[in-house]
Length: 127
Image 1 (spheres, rainbow, N blue to C red):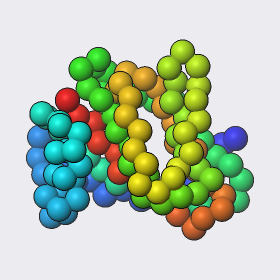
Image 2: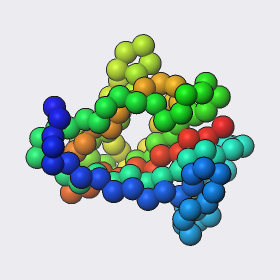
Image 3: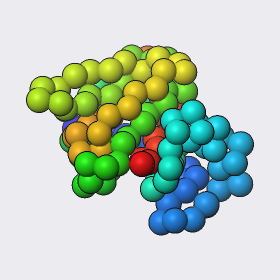
Image 4: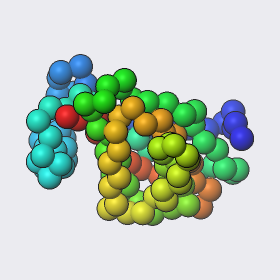
């Protein structure tokens, strides 16, 4: 269901070959090290506000390359999550400190929450 009154916030740590946030070294670098990433293309934090009714974003890919991976780190637990398509759609619930990793060419979409005041994730695209 499309909801015309949904809101989200974004903080970009890294994009277009540049560090864009003073928090990159403390927040993103340790994650990249854990992922054994050799190159980062994009790193951002997305936060959605609570919805009155369930809402999903459009299916999309972040980059069109089989060499790139997408990781999503859930910063809190809520009844939202992510749908990832790998032959069929699979819902992954938002659970604090859980990370999912999938090929960047797999379509995915955010599922916004109705229970908690916010849903926050760190999304990184890397090689």
